[in-house]
Length: 175
Image (cartoon, rainbow, N blue to C red; front, side):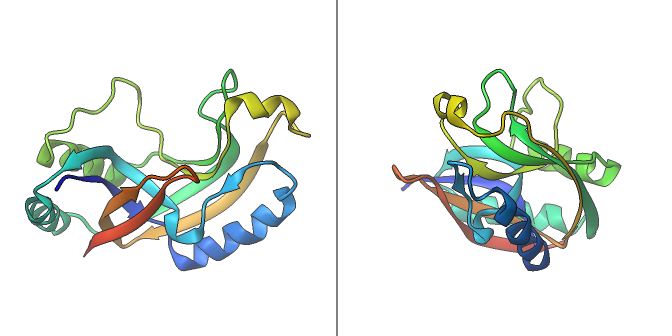
């Protein structure tokens, strides 16, 4: 049976705690906040796969070629565009190691990267674009200094429901 999977870097427990503290100042917004376990930096977007063991093997082979890295996240904002915002996300800085990892994963899984530039980010909350008109604030441009130690890369399974997606790590490989 095919599963909806994707490749990601999980957000550490210590950063999850910092995010929860930050979110308390924005609980008035009518959004669906993602739970800590669902926070991740997507490396390859979701696709349907029936060969999960083959995907595990590819990721294991690949992970040994990379080492742990610090990922710096600096800007919390509405996204992905201000014309049709539907997320609160935090953008990160691009670094050579992360780009090399993404390109290697894309090749290993034969996934073509979108033509747009890779923007390291993770989603904090989701909302419907049409609800944005009722928001008490229309601009969100918060500077943060959040560091995530990327010590593993994971295969996550997306479980979709009307209440939103829930993610489950089905394989974690240390870098």
